[in-house]
Image 1 (cartoon, rainbow, N blue to C red):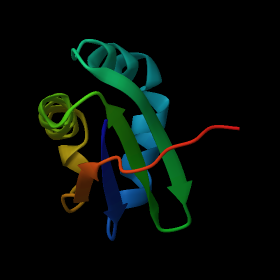
Image 2: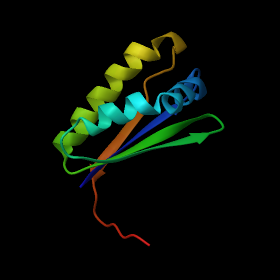
Image 3: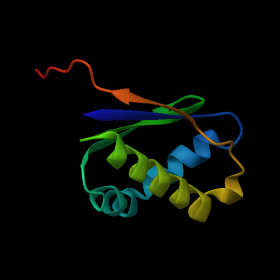
Length: 97
């Protein structure tokens, strides 16, 4: 599995996260359209927030990151937020409740 975290901060970050959350239906359709998608979460903070994507492999993560970038450019460019900091890697350990 592969995970990518996109951290939104600075000017326009809160508004960008709010727009992403308000656009759940569209975001869900985009994410589920990528082969290898497993899960997507958005966490809102006082200064912006971050999203966490889990996919089956790095290729799927790259496709999701590209789709997310396109969506933000098409729907949130007017907010003038800086690009998110992107961190990703292969899942080394995971366990559930």
